[in-house]
Image 1 (cartoon, rainbow, N blue to C red):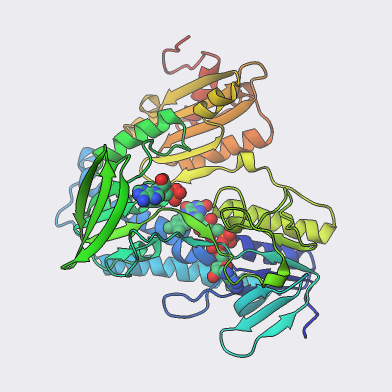
Image 2 (cartoon, helix red, strand yellow):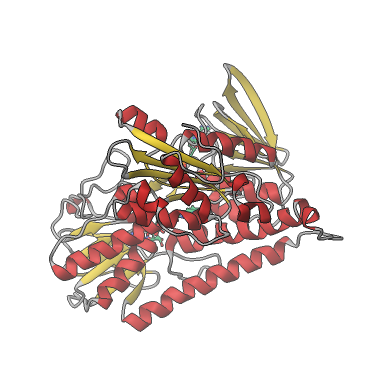
Length: 477
Ligand code: FAD
Ligand code: AMP
């Protein structure tokens, strides 16, 4: 029986590896158990995010966007291209190299900080006792002072479209296509479906997304989601809303999908089908019955505001628990838990200032409340918005679409939400997050000097517009 770890983390994704590094930085003897094996069947740190999530998807989004720009936008800049084409093997190899470099980097950070990487499966037994089963070898029991559960999530599977890893795949399969499918179907027009759909659409696939809900991206501010739907449609994404999938069949190498829309049964034939209907927490085989860990109705682990579970000294973070399934949220929770353990003082996280991003082109990024949420809460608010088409830098960049929007409390002027549609929105939103962290007013943002010419001036103008004093557009009073 090993008793010498103060903290054992189960899961080496952005929640778990960050928690483990922070614990070690704070002087706690820490081990991180992770079961991931990569495409070469080798153990790799970084979890979903680095191996089959954020990083490979952004690598392919960037490559495909360069190709799309070369094909559709270079002409306007007077750049002539001849014989433009795609070498998908090179594109995929570049993506794999980025992933390898980053996952290897975490291994280096573990070594530098003295975190023990235990390669294999972890299971909570009872109290803080953990069973560790290495990929090869005998299971053994660890008895640390604290346990952090960070086992993440995996794609939700549906019986209507069973994966065969060839014709019907999940997001992982769709990141690894070795040929550009001529016709690609995607079930689910959520964040993952739209990003993957964008990649393959840009590379030449005819992409159809079937989305059961009538409303496009209901969590996004309605004005921005309407703009985004139109722009993505113009790019060629065929997004069918109110389309509930009823079943699918692989016949003669093609996938026939039946779905219901507008009260009729319709069908779609595609070469590849991606199931992107959401993700579920990895709790299977995470704990023994005797552990007595309380789960919620979605199968996630129930935690309080400090990520503490119902078991003393056992915490849970990331996709495994409530809140948005986002890597940065997982990491911040991991860090907060590590600091709580080391200091003995619980340290919570504000979930209302977690930014969200959809990395389509244009990108969509937001923080805080949407207009529809404020309306339904009956909160009195003022809106300021500014179109990117009126921003000098955007014009110089040939950007045609986009919008920055600030929602502020009608009486206190505190910023309640910021919504950005445009290139680089993922970076621009950071300013809004910081402003909200500091409970800034729209006036604070309006009085902050922004460099010229930058896209961030659109956010500045949106803040000015809250009070009807944007300079580069006519204000509506
Ligand atoms: P994970 O990253 O899922 O890591 C969990 C780890 O625990 C895995 O390595 C798993 O093998 C291991 N594990 C599980 N059970 C056990 C066990 N019992 N014993 C040992 N090890 C175990 N988020 C963003 O913020 N931005 C993005 O752009 C973004 N893009 C995405 C794109 C795609 C295609 C996908 C699928 C996801 C994307 N996400 C994105 C979501 C992001 O990947 C997750 O929110 C994040 O990885 C969650 O981190 P985590 O540490 O909770 O879990
Ligand atoms: P997300 O939760 O962002 O990953 O998005 C998943 C999307 O898939 C949601 O918008 C769901 O409405 C959608 N979805 C789930 N099941 C089905 C189905 N059977 N047919 C079509 N869309 C679905």
